Image (cartoon, rainbow, N blue to C red; front, side, top):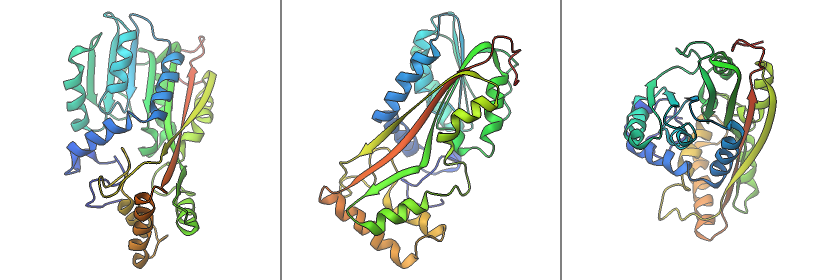
Length: 287
């Protein structure tokens, strides 16, 4: 989507966006979602990091998740974060001052990591694969840089689970149909995470999911539900995809806004997580 709406969908070209400070604030808001908190807590237990280990965060964004995990690595451990956005990394570096271990944040390509084979004890990636042209290649790269026995955790959204309930069947059906197919990105990757790590040769696979629910939102107070996109942005996306007539966009938005004002708005989105490990007989690459 290309929209002047600062609450528009997407993080594909963050550094080209005139609303970078707003995007940073939105990412902070999403990190406070109950579903994200739940999945990160599950992830921490599965990674089971120890003092002196090295952690790589692929698509680290503001670095908040990696910096929280730094406490488990101790002074002799290290966190390395890569992201496609320098603007996000500027914020991440500013936040790294009190980290419990050395931290390095740099611009990088998730599908072509510059790190050596077998150089990390653990790798994580959160809500990044959905924006990549080839998420499978990124997973292969994560496996490559892990040592034998190394652990990986992936958290990502499946946008086919998006649902909006405003007591209007037409709106609900339109949203359901709109998210049913992947268009210009792998937006359903969340539900494929388990298959992807198995295909990459990993074992000890565990999977979970969490659904975030929005029920309180006043469109007269804030343009979008907490940490999310605006309904105008969603309407624009539907029009661009040919799934909503331009003449119907205003009605679509007005219907949702009206329901929200009356306390009849509900929106849900499910995110999935997987953990796995490199077989101990592996050299850190795929098998």
